[in-house]
Length: 304
Ligand code: RIB
Ligand code: CA
Image 1 (cartoon, helix red, strand yellow):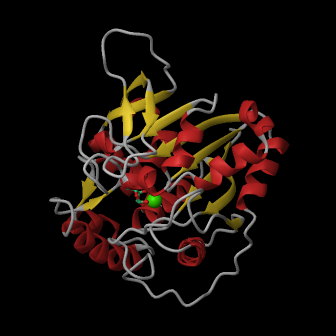
Image 2 (tube, helix red, strand yellow):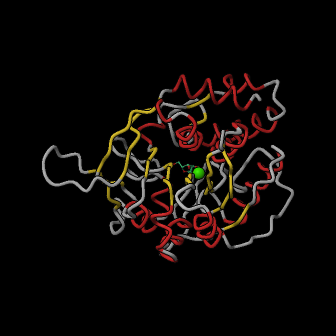
């Protein structure tokens, strides 16, 4: 069966690392590029960490670094991933920064018209820059699946905003209003899906077990300081899983706009949930996910 062509845009990040492993080990996709962006950590760290994950799974997927900062505002990094962005493992290699993620996204989409899906796991800076630099790619992108946003639940970075959108709301505004098929996997679907260290014990026969356990020990400690969960929230793996098993999500086409001006609500994904009035239905939103299906497939694929 022909493998679906995808680009993964990411800011590893513990959960990004697991999402990359899930997609790569599923062997369902022709991953044309992994592009990195600053978010969870600096662009040097997120690129080092992406290289670390690719080396860990023996992948030769091309890796290109991208934006070191949001379009207009200062970079705000996450706290939960530690100073390297992947606390728990030792990153020895300083990956060279190609700085060409935006041009590679444009080139790959143009060389594969209407065939490439873009999975974004971090702030939307690279994708927004690509859409601004060459708007002819908009009708050529098959679809965009994004981890981000918070529709009917509180934010995880401020009272209303989810981290990826909070970091670069201007980029999100550009992407959310681009006439391309978009799916959003927000906190509404992600908040209930986490794995405990006991769950990860089911990977103990995998050659990935030791580094995953080391990463998850730190990630869970980091998350517990902010969220009241006892496990590793699977934000990015759940966005990646939408490409594998979309039927395990309950979705709704919605009108969602981005708050870019207010300090108080910067990065809010503002959904128009009124039952009346004209709507600009611009994005399919995953309101919930089937945790049992996800955990079963996630562990099965990572154990391969
Ligand atoms: O809010 C969760 C998102 O922010 C995830 O993508 C995580 O990796 C961080 O980037
Ligand atoms: Ca991420």
